[in-house]
Each structure stands twice: as structure tokens, then as C-alpha cells.
Image (cartoon, rainbow, N blue to C red; front, side, top):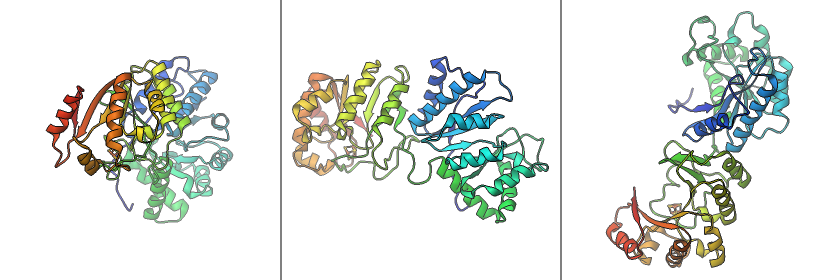
Length: 400
Ligand code: SF4
């Protein structure tokens, strides 16, 4: 392979024989994990009629619930199917909006082809190497190379020549070796194709999937935009892709409907507060922000806005007052002690941003509890910023 990747990523899901679609706790349990860093897929999920410990109808309900989660969070879906490939495809339908992996595939050829036609990827594990499994090797050879993945299914299904032993990730090389023979390519080219396929289906290739919601400091953060009218000297958004293992950079603005679906899956108790922020300035999308915050507040979340406080540059007093309605608290990045210093450090689009921010702070104080913050930055006189916050009689916090 041309590059090595040290990051380890995770998927979250409950096996078809373990998920209880009648219990909201089952969904909540998965959502709690999806809020963690580097969780990039939902699964395994699907249908299992080989060991039907949960009746088929209930399994289908559970599978649909996993699909709902994957679609809301924009995550890849990893599908388990045993003796139920046709039904799996039926439940997936024709218009799945997320990448799908048919995990550890050993099912019928025609279903694999239909799945590929619908954009799914087919994952082959140890069975591809089993001596008597020429049918599966023929299938792999007949599918488009850019739709094939290999995997281990550890600790099960060890490939030849370690069949029967406990499986482990390093054994995937044997499956890759067989595939390189099927494709008549050398191992390096085969590995390159497989790596690219994996990065693509898991949405790790450019443009990467953005984490729209994440948990940090005990709160849930909602990342609703990548736009901002400031260009602060300390801003990380053009220097890094995210923080704390979350990928927060946007490639285009996130879909409002998707953000609404995520809110429906969140429950108070999953975090202390629901904080609206951005890898940018959340008030750049005022209508969406108000709608999302309103729904979160209705659901019982304490709701906070993290803002640079310059929205009065773009919104009227009435619009800003309405925007603030659902919020319990507002955190404003003050970052300077005077207009001149603010313009030097935060480099706003308009020279009036400082005055707008001070007006906003006053307005926000009538609707919610307001806190001021400043980012510790070389050359910034933090004492005078703290003094200004004290003159405004507002709590102040230094951010690193
Ligand atoms: S206000 Fe925030 S998002 Fe905008 S440039 Fe400054 S630090 Fe970056």
C-alpha cells in the first residue's frame, strides 16, 4: 500500500438478534456511541434467518431503525445478512442515500449484482479463500473491482491457510492474496484498489464526511455551518480539519433536514447542554438555527449559542431578538478590549462588527444568560479583555 493509516475507526450497531425495536433505549444506546469521535458507520445490522432468535418482522423493524440512524447521521451502513439477502435488499429499497457495505458476503450471485447496481459495496472475508468456494471467487471476479472490499470478520472465518484458527486483522492479507490472483494483478495494485474502495465507502476519502454533531465537555455540539464573516488570526478552521478526533470541516453547507433528523434522535440526558456552533459562525444560518434550537428546547434540552456576536451586521433587531428566543444561554467570543484591537485580531468583514457585537451582548442579556470568552493569543492583553467583561458585569472565560 502506498500509505499507512494509524487511525482506528468504529461502527455502532446491534445484531438483528439483539436489537429490540420496541424499546427506545436500544436506539439511544447506539446514538450515544455515534456521538463519539471516529465512529463512522452504523452496523452490523440487517437480517438473520439462519439463527432467527428474534422474529423476522421485529428484525426488519430493527434494520429500518438502523437505516434511519445511518441516514440521519450520514454514516455508512454495514449490513449483516444470513439466508436473507433478498429481504435485505427489499428493505434497503432503491433509494438508499448512504453508502452501504454488504458485509462478509456469501449470498446468491444475482443479489450481489443487484446490490452493486444500487451502489452497494460487497465485502468478502475468509470464505473467499476456502478451497471449495470457487463459486464465490467467480462472483468476486465478475463484480466491478471498485465495488469490492475485503475484511476479516475476526475472530471468525479465518482464511486459508489459517482456517480453523482464531482470526485476526493481519490475516486479511490471505484474502487479499486470493483476490490478487482472481484479478490477475500484483498484491500492491490489489491493495491499492482495496484501500481506495474502503476510504471511499467509509467516507474518509476527500471530500470527507463532516461530523455534524459531537460530544465534548459533557455537552452535545451541533456544527451547522462552515461560513463566517470574521477571519480571526487564531481561527483553527483553515489550519486543521477538526478537534478531539472529530472531523468538523465542511465541504458545502450541511442539509437542514438532516440536522433536524439528528435533533429528533437526541435526548436530554445525552449531554448537559445542546450547543449550537459551527466550524464557522452559526448565526450565518439564522432561520435554520432558530428552528433547530426551538425544537431542541421543546425536547427539554438546555440550549446554548456559541457565537462571535456579530449577527446584527446582517440581521435586524427584531430578527435577532426572535433568533435568541429559544436559547437559555449565549457565549460570545469577545477576544479584544477595543474596536481597534478587535479589527486587528478578528479581522471582520465590516469595520462596524465590534459595535454590533457590543449591541448584541446587551440584547442577548435580556433573553438569556450571557458569558464572554477570549482565545488566548500571543499579543492579546487578556487582562484588559477581562476588565471589559467585568465592566459589562458578565462572566468571562479564557479559551486556549
Ligand atoms: S469567529 Fe470563530 S469561526 Fe469565525 S473566524 Fe473567528 S474563530 Fe473562526
